[in-house]
Image 1 (tube, rainbow, N blue to C red):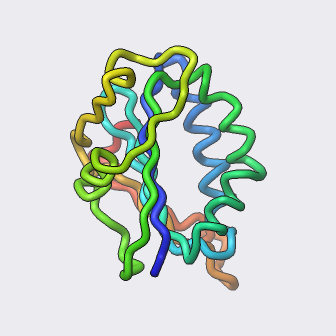
Image 2: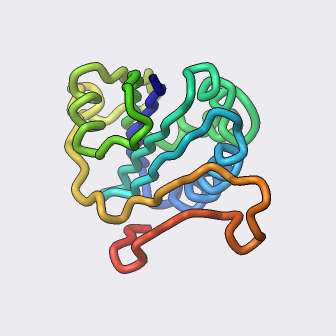
Image 3: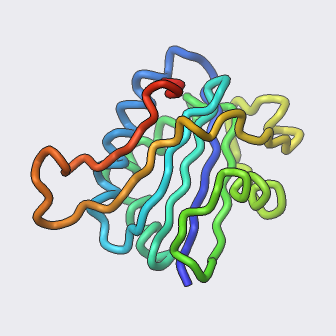
Amino acid sequence: MVFISATRLHLRTRLYIPLFLWHTFLIQRQMRKKPGFLGGKLLADANRVYWTLTVWEEAAAMKHLRDAGAHKRAMSYLQKWVDESSVVHWYQDSPEIPSFAEVHQKMLEDGHFSRLKNPSDKHNRRDIPAPVSTRSALALQPYQEGQSRSRKCNIKIDRDRALF
């Protein structure tokens, strides 16, 4: 069994995109080095919506990432940056990374909505639209000891479809 963690965030304004992306970069760098991280995807969707999807050996490994370093620092900005925030966790037998369609379905069924200072009407209605485009997802893989510097940042992106 592996632990799956997924989030959906909507940025309140385009002004926060540069800082959000910088913190996202720092978090993915931290995450790739964490023991127990098996893989994941980041999706920059339409209308300033960002999805994360990560696969872990166990829930404790994900919580260790969440509560330390770059991730903990970025969390302190979310109240200012976002007006929609939801998360869902589940266990599955296969370490295969789920599709965003599956993540959306799980979010609708079991998602938890964060308490926000400035929630949008969608957030208050518990409305979670499906991702518009999943082709721009960045695949994340754990750092492998012995990787050359050029392979150290092992992120794949379809540049023709990126929404950044």
